[in-house]
Image 1 (cartoon, rainbow, N blue to C red):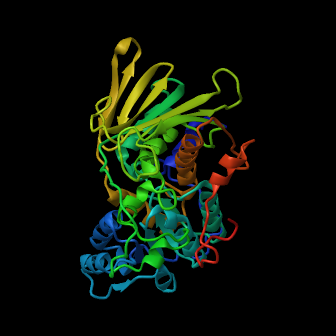
Image 2: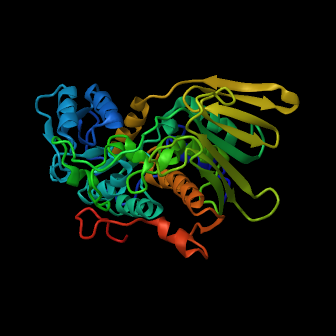
Length: 436
C-alpha cells in the first residue's frame, strides 16, 4: 500500500487518537508508575548527547543514573551537567547495560554505534531512544526492529519533527485532502558545513579510549578529522549529511507523502563539487525515489531529495524543508518553523507556525514506556526513513539506478550495490550484531 487512510495515519502520528497500537510482548512495560521517575543512562555525551543530558536533567520524571563516553573530558562534563552527585560516569556502554535499575537508555553515539548499541540495549531489557539515523545501514535497521519487538521494548528514533505539534497539524491537513492527492514530495538540505581539511594518522588523545570509540567498525588509525563530528563524512563511521541532517527532511517528506514501505527505484547523482578535503560523502547530491504502488495512474508516488552543504541560502523561505505537490494545491513546510498552503489559482490556503524542541519527543518516549504504546518515531518508522538515506548514498556511490525489493530489503541484479546493504565489521568484536 502507498497511501494510508485517515485512520491509519492518525494512528501513526500518535497523540491525535486515544488508541495507539500497543507493542507486542511488552513484558515489564507499564510497570513504572505514573509518579515514578524513569531511571536512564545516556550513552554518548557529545553534541546531541550533551543536549539530551541537559534536557533530561531538568525533568522531574527522570533520574540519570549514569552517563557513558570513551572521551574522559566529555564524560566529566556530562556528569557535572546532570547536577546529581549520584550519577555515575563510565566509559564502556556495557557498564550501563549491566545496571538492572536502568529502565531506558539514550544513544547519541556516532552512527556506526547506533544499531549495535540499540540491539544490545534491547537484549538487556532496556527501552531505547536512539539518535538519527537509527542505523548505519539497512541491515542493521531491520535487526533493530526485530530486537525491539522480540524483547518488548519501546524504541524511539530521534527525529523530533514527529512530535512537533505544528508538523502534526500540517500532516493532518494533508491526510484530509487540503491539496488533493499528493503525488510528489520534496526534501532539501541547504546549509554551509565546515571544510574538514586533509589530515594524516596520529596518536589518539590520551583522554580517549580509541578502541572503544571504533567499536565494531574496522580498526583504522586515529585521525583528527574523522573523530569528533568529522566522523559524519567517512563511510565506516557516518552516513554523510543525507543521514546527518537530511534524514529529518526525508522523514517529513515520507510522512506527508503517505508511503509506508520502501521505494523500488532509486536514481542519484552527486559528488564533491565544493570541498577539497578528506570527506568521502557528497557535498552535492540529488536523489529521486519512486514508489510504484499498483503501477497504475494515480498509484505511483515520487520523493525527491537534494542537498548542497556549501549553500547557506534559504530555499522557498526555509533553510531545510519540504514541499508537497498535490492535485489541488501545494504545501511548503519548514519542519522547525511553520508551513503554508497554496491552492488553485495561487490562492493562499491555511498556514501554521511552530518550533521544535526535544522535550515533547522525550515526553512521548517516556509516556510510551509507561503505556506500552508505540512512540511517534517508532523504530519501524525510523528505519523506513533512514533507509532512504542509505539507498540514496548507495545509488550515488555506485553511480547507477538501483532496483530495490521492499519486501526482502535487497537490491535486485547488482551484486556490488547489494554488498552495501550491510558493512564490514571488526572480526570477533563483542558488539557485532547477530544475524548480520
